[in-house]
Length: 273
Ligand SMILES: [Fe+2]
Image 1 (cartoon, rainbow, N blue to C red):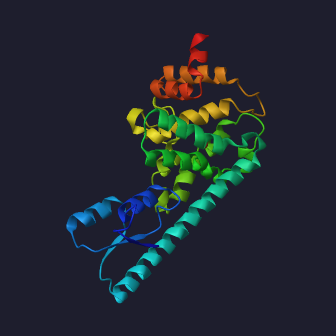
Image 2 (cartoon, rainbow, N blue to C red):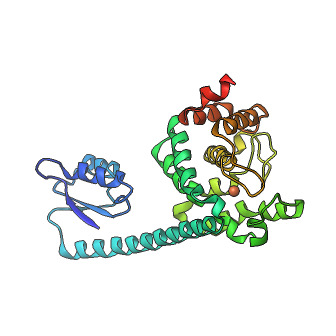
Image 3 (cartoon, rainbow, N blue to C red):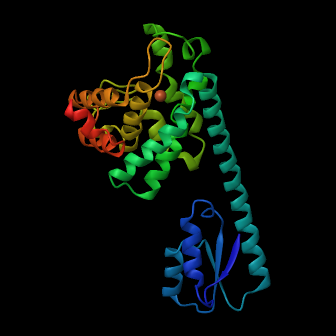
């Protein structure tokens, strides 16, 4: 945790606080602002800068010790959650590694989803959820039998039913983690389609969470452009045309598909043909 005086030469404590709280690497570190004034507006500006606690000068040693103890306790809890999330990401990457044909899928998905999110002007916390969702969307595949997951061919109807359980398995795995609450809708709904033809809940239109729609689009693109045991990888232009056709059938939002193809410099290539 960090004890920060508000009044400092050059950059003041409020600005330091703001910068630390906007950097993903440091934003979970508790910050106590030490302020000379008991001015309310100072505190409000401190809250806006993301400070976790305030101490007024002169600082009483007992109070200081109590605050440090309680915030350290909170930080330890957060670190535990962080490591639980890291364990899930490791699990997701392990699942991916079992199938050599899906190598790099999670990483590509994370970066493509963020690019599409940026293209349609989403806020930073949505972009972060997309990044984590890219890695974690298929974590529920841990509950799908290897014989189905690694089958070198198209699935039978029964096998597909087993495969279709992975979004709900993933969602319930991540449910205890408060830090993943914004990522869970991506995990649960990345196979939903706007026309209601997706799974697991057959959601329609706006019922499909926006971030899940985005991951759904880039997931399909990545699947099409990756080699499968029963078919070669599609050329990117061909995959682009397929996505546009899916949008035409009402399964994806056309403007999102176009924005994605635009970020991949594929929009013109796919409409010229
Ligand atoms: Fe999936």
